[in-house]
Image (cartoon, rainbow, N blue to C red; front, side):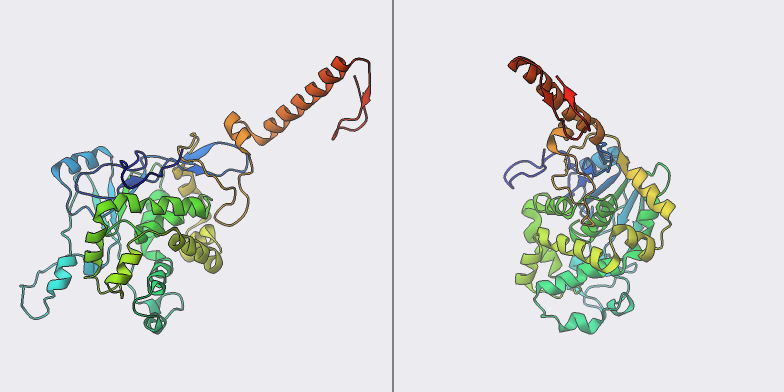
Length: 360
Protein backbone atom coordinates (compact mmCIF):
# COMPACT_ATOMS: atom_id res chain seq x y z
CA UNK A 1 0.00 0.00 0.00
CA UNK A 2 1.40 3.39 -0.94
CA UNK A 3 0.10 6.85 0.02
CA UNK A 4 0.35 8.23 -3.52
CA UNK A 5 -2.68 9.58 -5.35
CA UNK A 6 -3.24 12.17 -8.03
CA UNK A 7 -4.12 15.74 -7.10
CA UNK A 8 -7.73 15.17 -8.25
CA UNK A 9 -8.36 12.34 -5.81
CA UNK A 10 -9.18 12.79 -2.10
CA UNK A 11 -6.28 13.04 0.28
CA UNK A 12 -5.32 9.55 1.49
CA UNK A 13 -6.25 8.80 5.10
CA UNK A 14 -3.86 7.81 6.54
CA UNK A 15 -1.47 9.60 6.51
CA UNK A 16 -3.49 12.82 6.07
CA UNK A 17 -5.73 14.17 8.82
CA UNK A 18 -8.52 16.60 7.99
CA UNK A 19 -8.34 19.71 10.18
CA UNK A 20 -10.66 22.40 8.84
CA UNK A 21 -8.73 25.60 8.15
CA UNK A 22 -5.28 23.95 8.29
CA UNK A 23 -3.67 22.36 5.24
CA UNK A 24 -1.11 19.60 4.82
CA UNK A 25 -1.74 17.93 8.20
CA UNK A 26 -0.60 14.32 8.42
CA UNK A 27 0.51 11.63 10.85
CA UNK A 28 4.09 10.44 10.25
CA UNK A 29 3.26 7.01 11.70
CA UNK A 30 2.66 3.75 9.86
CA UNK A 31 5.91 3.62 7.88
CA UNK A 32 7.94 0.43 8.04
CA UNK A 33 11.03 0.54 10.25
CA UNK A 34 13.82 -1.68 8.86
CA UNK A 35 15.06 -4.35 11.26
CA UNK A 36 17.96 -6.81 11.21
CA UNK A 37 15.99 -9.81 12.52
CA UNK A 38 13.00 -9.86 10.22
CA UNK A 39 10.52 -8.39 12.72
CA UNK A 40 7.75 -6.29 11.20
CA UNK A 41 7.88 -2.92 12.92
CA UNK A 42 6.49 0.49 12.09
CA UNK A 43 6.52 4.08 13.32
CA UNK A 44 3.99 4.67 16.08
CA UNK A 45 0.82 6.34 14.85
CA UNK A 46 -0.80 9.20 16.74
CA UNK A 47 2.45 10.51 18.22
CA UNK A 48 3.97 12.99 15.74
CA UNK A 49 1.83 15.13 13.46
CA UNK A 50 3.16 17.61 10.91
CA UNK A 51 1.45 20.37 8.96
CA UNK A 52 1.09 24.07 8.23
CA UNK A 53 0.59 26.99 10.60
CA UNK A 54 -2.87 26.84 12.23
CA UNK A 55 -3.72 30.56 12.13
CA UNK A 56 -6.88 30.02 10.04
CA UNK A 57 -8.23 27.03 11.95
CA UNK A 58 -12.03 26.97 12.24
CA UNK A 59 -14.13 25.92 15.26
CA UNK A 60 -14.68 22.55 13.54
CA UNK A 61 -10.94 22.30 12.99
CA UNK A 62 -10.27 23.04 16.65
CA UNK A 63 -12.54 20.17 17.67
CA UNK A 64 -10.84 17.76 15.26
CA UNK A 65 -7.40 18.89 16.43
CA UNK A 66 -8.34 18.42 20.08
CA UNK A 67 -9.42 14.87 19.30
CA UNK A 68 -5.85 14.06 18.22
CA UNK A 69 -4.71 14.43 21.83
CA UNK A 70 -1.82 16.76 20.94
CA UNK A 71 -0.23 18.33 24.02
CA UNK A 72 2.65 20.32 22.51
CA UNK A 73 2.70 22.45 19.37
CA UNK A 74 6.19 23.23 18.08
CA UNK A 75 6.19 26.37 15.92
CA UNK A 76 9.47 26.61 13.96
CA UNK A 77 8.71 29.79 12.03
CA UNK A 78 11.14 32.69 12.20
CA UNK A 79 10.57 35.64 14.50
CA UNK A 80 9.85 37.80 11.44
CA UNK A 81 6.97 35.53 10.48
CA UNK A 82 5.22 36.18 13.78
CA UNK A 83 3.30 39.30 14.76
CA UNK A 84 5.37 41.73 16.86
CA UNK A 85 4.69 41.71 20.57
CA UNK A 86 3.89 45.42 20.27
CA UNK A 87 2.17 46.27 16.99
CA UNK A 88 3.26 49.40 15.13
CA UNK A 89 0.56 51.57 13.52
CA UNK A 90 0.45 51.45 9.73
CA UNK A 91 2.49 54.21 8.15
CA UNK A 92 4.49 54.83 11.33
CA UNK A 93 8.30 54.74 11.39
CA UNK A 94 9.58 51.18 11.29
CA UNK A 95 6.26 49.72 10.14
CA UNK A 96 6.49 47.28 7.22
CA UNK A 97 3.12 46.68 5.56
CA UNK A 98 4.60 43.91 3.38
CA UNK A 99 6.02 42.06 6.36
CA UNK A 100 2.80 42.49 8.31
CA UNK A 101 0.97 40.58 5.58
CA UNK A 102 3.36 37.66 6.21
CA UNK A 103 2.80 37.70 9.95
CA UNK A 104 -0.08 35.35 10.66
CA UNK A 105 -1.66 35.58 14.11
CA UNK A 106 -0.50 33.17 16.78
CA UNK A 107 -3.20 30.69 17.67
CA UNK A 108 -3.38 28.93 21.02
CA UNK A 109 -5.08 25.56 20.70
CA UNK A 110 -7.09 24.11 23.58
CA UNK A 111 -5.17 21.71 25.79
CA UNK A 112 -1.80 22.39 24.17
CA UNK A 113 1.40 24.24 25.01
CA UNK A 114 2.90 26.24 22.15
CA UNK A 115 6.71 26.21 21.93
CA UNK A 116 8.39 28.61 19.49
CA UNK A 117 11.75 27.48 18.04
CA UNK A 118 13.25 29.91 15.50
CA UNK A 119 15.43 27.67 13.33
CA UNK A 120 17.06 30.69 11.67
CA UNK A 121 17.67 32.62 14.88
CA UNK A 122 21.45 32.70 14.33
CA UNK A 123 23.22 34.19 11.30
CA UNK A 124 24.72 31.63 8.92
CA UNK A 125 28.25 32.77 9.81
CA UNK A 126 27.74 31.71 13.43
CA UNK A 127 26.91 28.13 12.53
CA UNK A 128 28.96 25.43 10.78
CA UNK A 129 31.64 27.18 8.78
CA UNK A 130 29.44 28.64 6.05
CA UNK A 131 29.44 32.38 5.70
CA UNK A 132 26.95 35.05 4.78
CA UNK A 133 29.18 35.82 1.83
CA UNK A 134 28.82 32.23 0.59
CA UNK A 135 25.08 32.77 0.55
CA UNK A 136 25.27 36.21 -1.08
CA UNK A 137 27.59 34.87 -3.79
CA UNK A 138 24.92 32.45 -5.01
CA UNK A 139 22.69 33.70 -7.87
CA UNK A 140 19.81 35.60 -6.30
CA UNK A 141 17.07 33.63 -8.06
CA UNK A 142 18.65 30.20 -7.78
CA UNK A 143 17.66 26.86 -6.34
CA UNK A 144 21.15 26.80 -4.78
CA UNK A 145 20.05 29.55 -2.38
CA UNK A 146 17.10 27.43 -1.35
CA UNK A 147 19.26 24.33 -0.82
CA UNK A 148 21.69 26.48 1.18
CA UNK A 149 18.84 27.41 3.51
CA UNK A 150 17.85 23.76 3.93
CA UNK A 151 21.42 22.83 4.85
CA UNK A 152 21.37 25.74 7.29
CA UNK A 153 18.53 23.98 9.13
CA UNK A 154 20.91 21.12 9.94
CA UNK A 155 23.64 23.53 10.98
CA UNK A 156 21.32 25.27 13.42
CA UNK A 157 19.63 22.06 14.51
CA UNK A 158 20.36 22.57 18.21
CA UNK A 159 17.42 24.98 18.17
CA UNK A 160 15.23 21.93 17.55
CA UNK A 161 16.57 19.94 20.50
CA UNK A 162 13.47 20.51 22.70
CA UNK A 163 11.48 18.46 20.18
CA UNK A 164 13.86 15.52 20.45
CA UNK A 165 14.15 15.86 24.23
CA UNK A 166 10.37 15.56 24.44
CA UNK A 167 10.36 12.42 22.28
CA UNK A 168 13.11 10.90 24.45
CA UNK A 169 10.82 10.96 27.51
CA UNK A 170 9.03 7.80 28.62
CA UNK A 171 5.58 7.70 26.98
CA UNK A 172 5.82 11.12 25.29
CA UNK A 173 2.58 12.98 24.64
CA UNK A 174 1.54 13.57 21.00
CA UNK A 175 3.02 16.65 19.30
CA UNK A 176 2.22 18.86 16.31
CA UNK A 177 5.13 20.31 14.34
CA UNK A 178 4.72 23.16 11.86
CA UNK A 179 6.45 26.02 10.07
CA UNK A 180 4.49 28.12 7.55
CA UNK A 181 3.45 25.49 5.00
CA UNK A 182 4.75 22.42 6.82
CA UNK A 183 7.11 21.72 3.92
CA UNK A 184 10.87 22.25 4.31
CA UNK A 185 11.71 23.17 7.89
CA UNK A 186 9.16 20.67 9.11
CA UNK A 187 10.39 18.19 6.50
CA UNK A 188 13.96 18.47 7.77
CA UNK A 189 12.87 17.50 11.30
CA UNK A 190 10.96 14.48 9.97
CA UNK A 191 13.99 13.52 7.85
CA UNK A 192 16.12 13.44 11.02
CA UNK A 193 13.61 11.21 12.82
CA UNK A 194 13.18 8.87 9.86
CA UNK A 195 16.94 8.74 9.36
CA UNK A 196 17.47 7.85 13.01
CA UNK A 197 15.10 4.90 12.55
CA UNK A 198 17.01 3.73 9.48
CA UNK A 199 14.40 4.53 6.85
CA UNK A 200 15.91 4.85 3.36
CA UNK A 201 16.14 8.23 1.58
CA UNK A 202 13.58 6.99 -0.95
CA UNK A 203 10.95 6.62 1.80
CA UNK A 204 11.92 9.97 3.34
CA UNK A 205 11.52 11.58 -0.09
CA UNK A 206 8.14 9.91 -0.68
CA UNK A 207 6.84 11.24 2.63
CA UNK A 208 8.23 14.72 1.92
CA UNK A 209 6.60 14.82 -1.53
CA UNK A 210 3.16 14.24 0.02
CA UNK A 211 3.24 17.97 0.78
CA UNK A 212 2.34 18.55 -2.88
CA UNK A 213 -0.96 16.75 -2.22
CA UNK A 214 -1.39 18.38 1.17
CA UNK A 215 -1.03 21.93 -0.14
CA UNK A 216 -3.04 21.31 -3.30
CA UNK A 217 -4.73 24.54 -4.42
CA UNK A 218 -2.99 26.46 -1.61
CA UNK A 219 0.34 26.55 -3.50
CA UNK A 220 -0.33 29.93 -5.24
CA UNK A 221 -1.16 31.48 -1.85
CA UNK A 222 2.05 29.98 -0.47
CA UNK A 223 4.08 31.64 -3.23
CA UNK A 224 2.35 34.95 -2.53
CA UNK A 225 3.14 34.59 1.16
CA UNK A 226 6.79 33.65 0.57
CA UNK A 227 7.26 36.68 -1.68
CA UNK A 228 6.80 38.77 1.46
CA UNK A 229 9.47 36.85 3.37
CA UNK A 230 12.80 38.74 3.27
CA UNK A 231 14.67 35.53 4.16
CA UNK A 232 13.87 33.78 0.89
CA UNK A 233 16.13 35.69 -1.53
CA UNK A 234 14.09 34.52 -4.53
CA UNK A 235 11.69 36.26 -6.88
CA UNK A 236 8.29 34.93 -7.94
CA UNK A 237 9.70 32.64 -10.64
CA UNK A 238 12.16 31.07 -8.22
CA UNK A 239 9.54 30.72 -5.51
CA UNK A 240 7.18 28.91 -7.86
CA UNK A 241 9.91 26.33 -8.42
CA UNK A 242 10.71 25.79 -4.76
CA UNK A 243 7.04 25.78 -3.70
CA UNK A 244 6.94 22.26 -5.12
CA UNK A 245 8.23 19.58 -2.74
CA UNK A 246 10.65 17.88 -5.12
CA UNK A 247 12.13 14.64 -3.88
CA UNK A 248 15.65 15.68 -4.89
CA UNK A 249 15.54 18.52 -2.34
CA UNK A 250 15.18 16.24 0.65
CA UNK A 251 17.34 13.50 -0.90
CA UNK A 252 20.11 16.09 -1.22
CA UNK A 253 19.66 16.97 2.44
CA UNK A 254 19.90 13.26 3.32
CA UNK A 255 23.22 13.19 1.48
CA UNK A 256 24.49 16.22 3.40
CA UNK A 257 23.44 14.56 6.65
CA UNK A 258 25.48 11.48 5.72
CA UNK A 259 28.53 13.22 4.25
CA UNK A 260 28.88 16.10 6.68
CA UNK A 261 27.62 14.62 9.94
CA UNK A 262 28.12 10.88 9.46
CA UNK A 263 24.41 10.04 9.39
CA UNK A 264 21.45 10.66 11.66
CA UNK A 265 22.72 8.86 14.75
CA UNK A 266 26.05 10.70 14.69
CA UNK A 267 24.17 13.94 14.14
CA UNK A 268 22.10 13.36 17.28
CA UNK A 269 25.11 12.24 19.31
CA UNK A 270 27.78 14.70 18.17
CA UNK A 271 25.93 17.76 16.88
CA UNK A 272 22.90 17.78 19.17
CA UNK A 273 24.99 16.34 22.03
CA UNK A 274 22.36 13.78 23.00
CA UNK A 275 23.35 10.70 24.97
CA UNK A 276 23.17 7.18 23.58
CA UNK A 277 20.41 6.51 26.09
CA UNK A 278 18.34 9.45 24.85
CA UNK A 279 18.81 8.41 21.23
CA UNK A 280 17.69 4.89 22.05
CA UNK A 281 14.73 6.29 24.01
CA UNK A 282 13.59 8.21 20.91
CA UNK A 283 13.73 5.00 18.89
CA UNK A 284 11.88 3.06 21.57
CA UNK A 285 9.12 5.66 21.75
CA UNK A 286 8.68 5.90 17.99
CA UNK A 287 8.77 2.20 17.05
CA UNK A 288 6.02 -0.35 17.63
CA UNK A 289 5.66 -4.04 16.74
CA UNK A 290 2.89 -3.46 14.23
CA UNK A 291 2.61 -4.36 10.58
CA UNK A 292 3.35 -1.20 8.57
CA UNK A 293 0.75 0.59 6.51
CA UNK A 294 3.47 1.86 4.17
CA UNK A 295 6.14 -0.85 3.63
CA UNK A 296 9.69 0.14 2.74
CA UNK A 297 10.39 -0.96 -0.80
CA UNK A 298 14.18 -0.53 -0.87
CA UNK A 299 16.57 -2.40 1.36
CA UNK A 300 19.14 0.32 1.96
CA UNK A 301 18.87 2.41 5.11
CA UNK A 302 19.60 6.12 5.40
CA UNK A 303 23.27 5.28 5.89
CA UNK A 304 23.42 3.25 2.68
CA UNK A 305 23.80 -0.08 4.50
CA UNK A 306 21.48 -3.03 4.07
CA UNK A 307 19.43 -3.21 7.24
CA UNK A 308 16.50 -5.37 6.19
CA UNK A 309 17.33 -8.13 3.75
CA UNK A 310 14.14 -10.20 3.83
CA UNK A 311 12.43 -10.71 0.49
CA UNK A 312 8.82 -10.17 -0.44
CA UNK A 313 7.92 -13.83 0.16
CA UNK A 314 9.43 -13.76 3.64
CA UNK A 315 7.59 -10.48 4.36
CA UNK A 316 4.34 -12.08 3.25
CA UNK A 317 4.80 -15.01 5.66
CA UNK A 318 5.77 -12.59 8.45
CA UNK A 319 8.52 -14.89 9.76
CA UNK A 320 12.17 -14.43 10.63
CA UNK A 321 15.06 -14.98 8.22
CA UNK A 322 16.14 -18.20 9.97
CA UNK A 323 12.68 -19.75 9.94
CA UNK A 324 12.23 -18.75 6.33
CA UNK A 325 15.49 -20.51 5.37
CA UNK A 326 14.40 -23.65 7.28
CA UNK A 327 11.06 -23.62 5.47
CA UNK A 328 12.76 -23.43 2.07
CA UNK A 329 15.23 -26.18 2.99
CA UNK A 330 12.37 -28.47 4.15
CA UNK A 331 10.47 -27.88 0.93
CA UNK A 332 13.53 -28.69 -1.20
CA UNK A 333 14.23 -31.90 0.70
CA UNK A 334 10.58 -32.95 0.38
CA UNK A 335 10.69 -32.43 -3.37
CA UNK A 336 13.91 -34.46 -3.62
CA UNK A 337 12.56 -37.30 -1.48
CA UNK A 338 9.18 -37.68 -3.09
CA UNK A 339 10.53 -36.97 -6.55
CA UNK A 340 13.07 -39.78 -6.24
CA UNK A 341 10.43 -42.15 -4.86
CA UNK A 342 8.11 -41.36 -7.75
CA UNK A 343 10.80 -42.14 -10.33
CA UNK A 344 11.36 -45.50 -8.64
CA UNK A 345 14.36 -47.20 -7.08
CA UNK A 346 16.78 -45.97 -4.46
CA UNK A 347 19.40 -43.48 -5.41
CA UNK A 348 22.23 -41.79 -3.60
CA UNK A 349 21.79 -38.05 -3.82
CA UNK A 350 24.16 -35.41 -2.46
CA UNK A 351 22.14 -32.58 -0.96
CA UNK A 352 23.92 -29.21 -0.60
CA UNK A 353 24.85 -27.77 1.91
CA UNK A 354 24.57 -30.91 4.05
CA UNK A 355 27.77 -32.97 4.34
CA UNK A 356 27.68 -36.63 3.30
CA UNK A 357 24.90 -38.30 1.37
CA UNK A 358 21.20 -38.76 1.72
CA UNK A 359 19.88 -42.24 0.86
CA UNK A 360 16.42 -42.25 -0.67
